[in-house]
Amino acid sequence: MSTKINVRSPFYLNITEPVKPTPLFTCDIANIQGLTIDQQGQISTPSLSFGVISSITSSDSDFANNKFATETTATPRTLIIRITIPAGFSNVSDGYIDCGKTVTQPALVTSGSSPSCSGGVTTNGSIPSQSLAVGGATSTINLASYFTQGSSAIAGYNIYNPDQTLVSASITGNTLTLTSNQLGGSTSINISAFDNDANTCTATQTISVSVTNPSVAFDCAAANLTGGSMLQNGTITNPNTFATITAIRTTSGDASTNITSYPANGTGSSRSVTLFFDLTIPSGYSNSGTLECSHVFTQPAANPTFDCATANLSGQQITTKGSILKGSSQLGTITSFSPIGFDTVSTDTTRSVTFNVQIPSGYANTGDGNQTISCVRSVTQPAEVAECGSETFFISAGKRNQSDFCDFQYSITKEVTATTLSQTLAALGARVCFNGNPFEGRDRYYAVFTSKIDIGSGSAPFHVWKIDDNGIIQDVSIWNCGAGVSGTGAGGAV
Image (cartoon, rainbow, N blue to C red; front, side, top):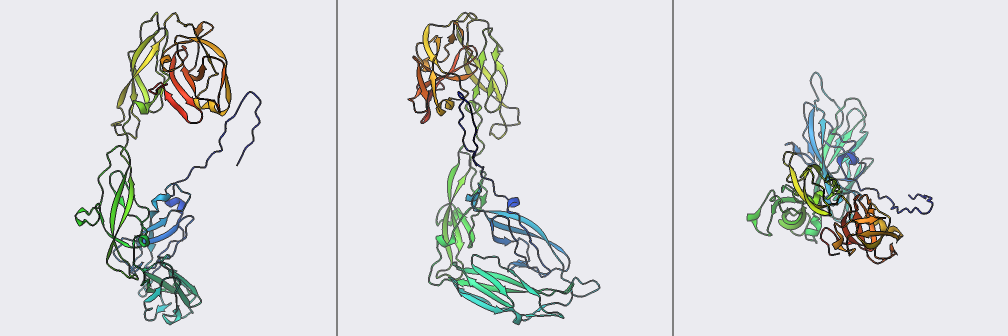
């Protein structure tokens, strides 16, 4: 998107095309739809608005072979749907999110005074286990041989295939087709059959499927550990992998370093942590047993300490009468200052003022929310009868930010005098006057030089003064439009 704006000279606009923020991928954005459990305990395959389902699991004790046992009363079931985070979201590096859902499984009662279903489809024997080689091998199964209709014909089948990266499953008529993908391993696929009669029972068959890759050894590349996280307090969320993680250790090969969490990070900055995971090698590969694979986490730091540099005070001034103007802080709130004022002076005088700043939330030293830190600032109190000095300089028009000089070429033409011999850091605290009176700088930034020149885009680095309403220079810096600030009155050599 672009917008054309017409502006009359001498106004100039420096507009950057807005960048759409990258959103956080959440369970609400994923929008799980169509998740149900039937009377046989079989889970449906839900759909998503965004993302891809990598697994559906449950901690319920009777969850086995990717389905639940039947129940005689309606039973709430807790499911965890693991969803791979798609590109275009700020947390894509996490790999996945786990979304919890509670779904009620209906009762399966086939007899008595109020059965939940009666008649309908029944199973006929068991579908044998299937073994496929990797890389597109197929197997077809005639489902009519393993289900028996009731009083009406079988109307259709539902598939629940929890690991579609391992094997694909589709049904045409009564024929189930299984097709292997590029990974070895094993899974269970559930097939339910139903008719269109009212309140009839469904029937479910579970098929064990293994995909073999006998000429290839399972390695860490195949394990493909992705995502996961480590919190500041050391809580570990395991990375995603289709292998089973059996142990986590801090040192490779050292069983004595098995952990379930990591020490909290109190260093004040994020840190990289490498952990080693023991994986049970899935069936279908040339090797077996346990494989160790490493994975790197970034553990965030604890909340930082709030200090005066973070508060970043600005705009503090002392009037000719000795009154203190507290200015503002970038973060936190200035609650008080001391002393409360000064006597008038006949010459410009540097004063030390202590400003107390309330610590905002989100910092290690926030405490009960009423804590403050003390920040001492040196502020020049101007003389009651202003001393204007006789050194001549030329300044530009004022800017709210130093970077505002870099969108064009600006002229330094306004002649002023100052109580300093230099435009460098030595000018800090000096007074600038115009026509014999203190220059009302309004806390803005002014490019300064000893003669009339043009500065800005494409020019050599130039000095900038920040001047308050009493004409006092509060900050001195060198600004380089190619690289930003190269020195400041806060401590840079200018």
